[in-house]
Image (cartoon, rainbow, N blue to C red; front, side, top):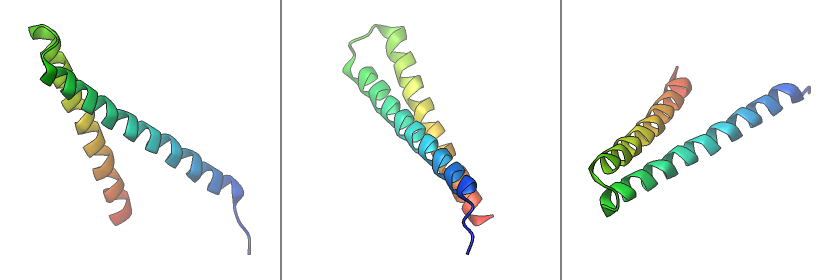
Length: 73
């Protein structure tokens, strides 16, 4: 039995980076929406925070959808 350690390390590295990025985007989405909901900023900043939060959640959803596509295909 032969284990391709380079491929295993590559898969581990990519999955680690993608996991950290996905958690980071989700966290930024929560922070953005909570700042928009708190109303601490003036009009334009609140709208930008809400849009940024939704953008982060959209990136998370796209990453999950791509992962499901990779598994199914």
